[in-house]
Length: 177
Image (cartoon, rainbow, N blue to C red; front, side, top):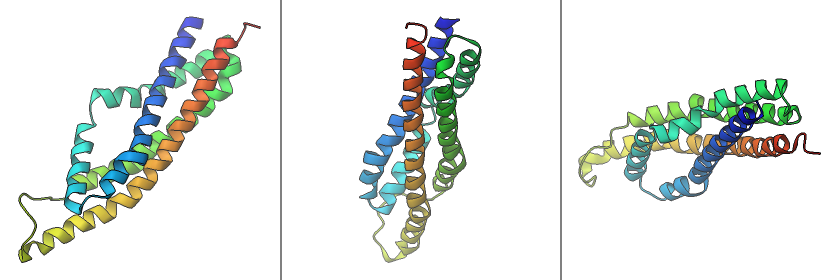
């Protein structure tokens, strides 16, 4: 039972850490870098990133911590690692907050941006003003909200990771005194 508790909590903590790192990297590197790009480059890059990220390497650490944290809660409630229970519950709440920000705000913004028409070829003729305006409008309706909510989810996942790391420590030291 203790080995299952440890493995469950460890895997959930690793998943939370991976998500915290991903969202933090977007906050301090990816989005500031893309923010320096023109509208078309910004929209195309975000469309490509949003399409590419839906894969097992993202979905596994994004989704798996939820059932693992629920299981870790049940195991801590009924097992020897009960000292870690408040920290596991707090980590679960924060992880779910970040999860709901992603699914409720960032993903819908990604889906809306995906519909923006970027077109092929250069945008330099007088007839291309309309396309330039549409790209600017797509970026303007996306960028500020997405960046703000990405920071929120990065903070939530980072806090969840910290709490779960502490829970893992407490679980590991439970019963050793």
